[in-house]
Image 1: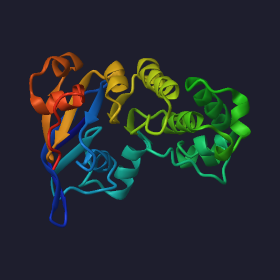
Image 2: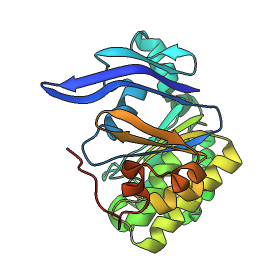
Image 3: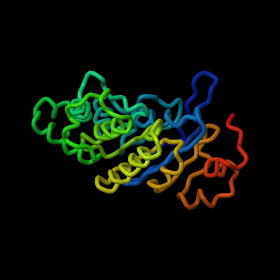
Length: 249
């Protein structure tokens, strides 16, 4: 379970999060929408302790992230896979080496053969052939790089997956492929996921619930059906962007 409890964060005079509370249940996939610059990625970084809240608490796997010691925070992070917006693959490493980075350090040191087989299994889970393992990121398409990033995020049997704009920069076909993979991983592995995205159509396909971050707060939270049926003008501006726009500042 992931829970944010009245989390506030400001950078200078800029209030990014204002007493944000959000709970993601085990096995659930939640999509987080909102205008650019409203703190969606900042929210994800709070979950893995890359950013500390000014106020409030973040609970992951029963652990208070802001109050966790170094070893406890490391243990939690090993259970959380993060798919970065730009994939964040290391150019000097081949695909297999990039995937192995998602595995616990001790296992990498002690079980190289097992790590190799796990990397191959992760390639299978994201629908890539074993031959891809020897390629370098520069030899992959954008869609394939995203899939390798997803393979790395699950390589250590992570229980939680955080996706930061997973379909950004992809053509509609590849965006649909990535969306199908998110659904596949949730179904096959039972992971708990949060998807930060502007791709509402694809996110609706795989999400159990949807949250709208607007003006530093959770403006709306509910099922996909509840969002689609909502008469709230702010919600409608995201669900149906062809309607009259709502100010974002």
